[in-house]
Amino acid sequence: MTFQIMKKQPITERALKRPSKYEPLIDMEIGDCVRLENKKEANAAYMFLYRNNFGGLTRQQKDGSYFLWRIF
Image (cartoon, rainbow, N blue to C red; front, side, top):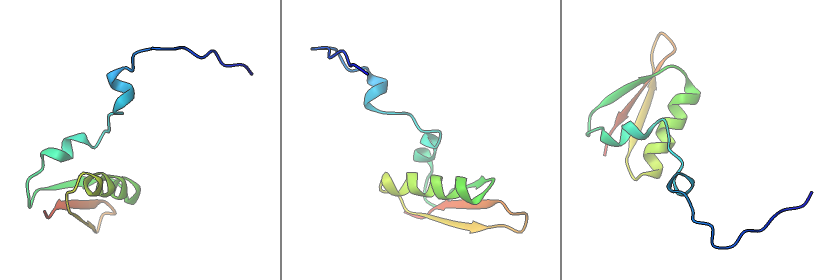
């Protein structure tokens, strides 16, 4: 395999920041909560908050879904 190296190619804005489906969680206020379908989604949303310097708390519900609260 060979690669073609290109010089001075501008970086697209999308390449700099890959959008996340959890981006709307940034707008949550302290005490707000969202319902997530499964543990995998809950963990991903929790980590998104954590990486953006927000605190989160998850709890499993009786129906198997999860709630994620923003706590700080």
